[in-house]
Length: 166
DNA sequence: CCCACAAGTCGCT
DNA sequence: AGCGACTTGTGGG
Image (cartoon, rainbow, N blue to C red; front, side, top):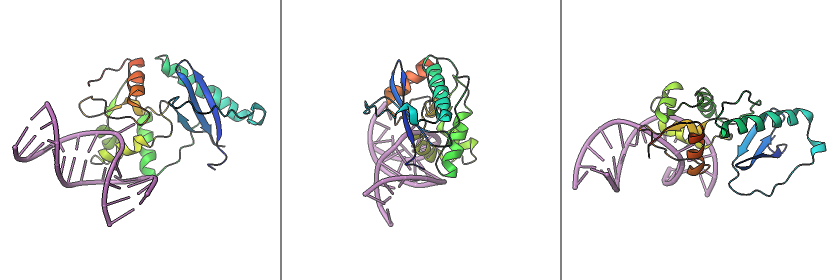
């Protein structure tokens, strides 16, 4: 299943993100951090279904980067443990422009003491931005960390008009 | 204020 | 089995 992932660049004003699709939907998304050798798959071999998802993904991504809530999300093909899926699911419920702390997420999934585990699951989030791991701040509204690069977390929060401490 | 530590869970070595 | 990771609350200097 992993081998059949289709890699497609998503061009935005902030650089080229890379989306990876499985037969079930969007499986991964990465920041334009390292200028990945834009290994573009020939359009002809991209199934129409995936081209449709790509269009939605691109629109959603651009909306968020422009500070607007996305209208639609592509189907997501999440791979992970039950614990991680619970966390990611909780993350998707955070309203645009709102934030939650790692501790609050832990409570939502019914394991109030698993705050640290939540951090780990967020770090393992395969689809940043669409699954708003950046809307999760530490307890005192401080930034905490971010696997995609702290700079991105700040940019994303700023675009959504979210305030935070340092 | 800064440092150390423990706790719940996952993934890599 | 051990350790680090997008944490947090507590305790001591």
